[in-house]
Length: 479
Length: 95
Figure 1: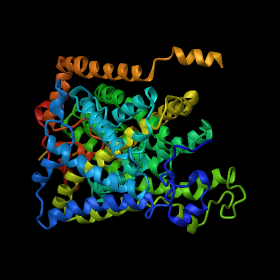
Figure 2: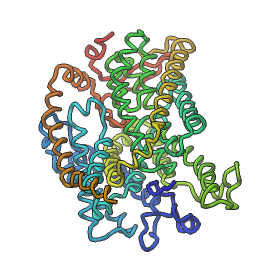
Figure 3: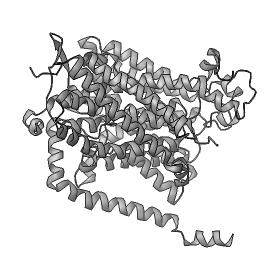
Figure 4: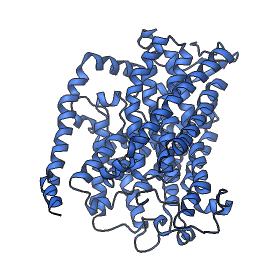
């Protein structure tokens, strides 16, 4: 199977020499870049975090002042212009992102005559995607910007076709990796204990069991042809929707249409579950903590979890949000584990049956050695983890927590823009035939439904056991 | 070969397809959705989320809005909500 659309491997100069042609960094045109894509994503991602944090630490910036210049389109009901009325926010955010994207394109040798118009095109489509997602009904149905970014890109590529000048700015992998490094600052390990042992049991025991079982089911029972599609759908469904899908897809180098399919299914089921699950909880008359934990552990999208909890009670909302927050923290661990598993076992397996058959570095059934794992490992994951560990440590004190929250309050906007541009780019590079191929036999949908069913059963059982049997009375109370 | 050419000729020209798609988006977002937003059912949902400080379109918990400030303190081994700003009457209505 052709892997033309996959996220390229982390490729240093040495790695690139040894890679099969199909795995070589596709961003390089003509000559090898000075810095690999992963390292550049780390430099820009950590750079943005450092500049914003430094601004607060040295008193050079104030949160309110920065928010005047950094933002995204706001909510609207019937006048989309009001969504972008705060023009300086658009200029500030898009200006900084344009500088970063242009620098990256120069490093990667992509700076052609059409790049700048292409970048403007991608930014305009990303802005339009945000505006579409900010309409009040769409926003309250939890239909996130990622979906509309993808749809807009697909419309262009499947009607007039993506022109070369627009395609030149569609740097999907760079946008996703930079966004993920910035996202690392939002994953604070200290919040793991927010609900004590019951929370950990629901979010950190059930979730990996569902993830691994669903992946195994897809491989062994459904026999899904693409292991990366199987992994992205499994992580998307079991961890926390779009953000988990993005991180896992980048970690296992999934094809772009595989990521697109996973998030489309996830957002579709999120709307259904957000409406149906609270009614089922009311009908079953489940206690607040059990119902909240069930919502938090099973509904993919974080916003939908809160909206579903709000249909029940304050306690249920609090438990649901906290369980989802603890699940969010799992993304870092899952991304690292998937990246390691992929370079150690999956890539050698596919290579030993393909181009690299007979490669001495591949030991059948045992994967590759540690040195080879390090050479292939996607480096941006390290930037993501470094940001997460640093900000988790910083947030241990009250003052540090304030700094961390102020920083993330600004940087999450950049992360959002990078993800939005990534989904526009994916849409621009995908056609409906590729979608149809990925959806072959309906197996991904079946995988999602079976995995989510297991998730619903196990999460409810675990929530009931920990909150009602093992730790009875551990119900969050109001002061 | 000839069939392929005929098929191609029967397809909408690309620019027309693009125009139709964007016209559909315009009609849905500028005409249909504002009407849906005004409906009683949708207004109830929107107001409930607004009062609770929930951004239902959040991808991760840092985007949730004011409700993301939910924190628990432990008092005698039990988690106690110590910073929660949800409008109690609105959210607890179903219980």
